[in-house]
Image 1 (tube, rainbow, N blue to C red):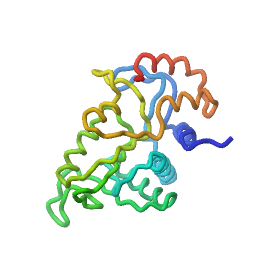
Image 2: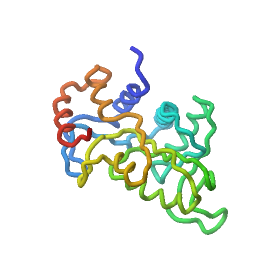
Image 3: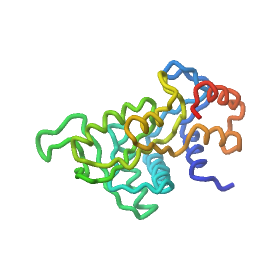
Image 4: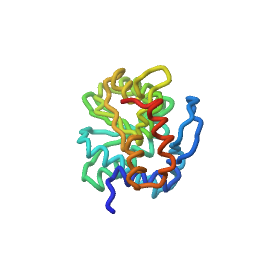
Length: 220
């Protein structure tokens, strides 16, 4: 059976212990039938494959930009891996940069390491997941302070498509509403459910709980 890149990514997450099923209490207090722990990515092989999935998402959505921005800290290796995959798989040479937690006042100085941003530059923000939009809120002022750049989009690994605690909108929808930024995900929770239904991954015993959770907290 030939899998799509989205299906391959879901299998990749399961095989590496990043996507698990059961009963988990989330930071929000909600009890979810699945859990995503990106902290389980820890090898060069995993990171190389992860970059390929992010690059495929950028290519599929035809996103045009000059530079990939990886917010510290998790976004740093992701932006580097994605830049490498874009070059190797699509012959697209893109810059990358990431922010320092504190402005460096000696040597080359500045807030960003890597490509020094310029007015008019188009950037794509690379992150692992989006729960509350905190990383986006932190990186945008830094980008604005560095140069007048245009954010062409943000890439995350999984869109939970889940209502925020104090809103009927998901974190992805809130990013669009508040900042006008489109957030693209390699996969969504609906893709994961479909993968179980289609036998791409095991876990049909978890489908009733997945459906129930989506009905209670999911967005349309």
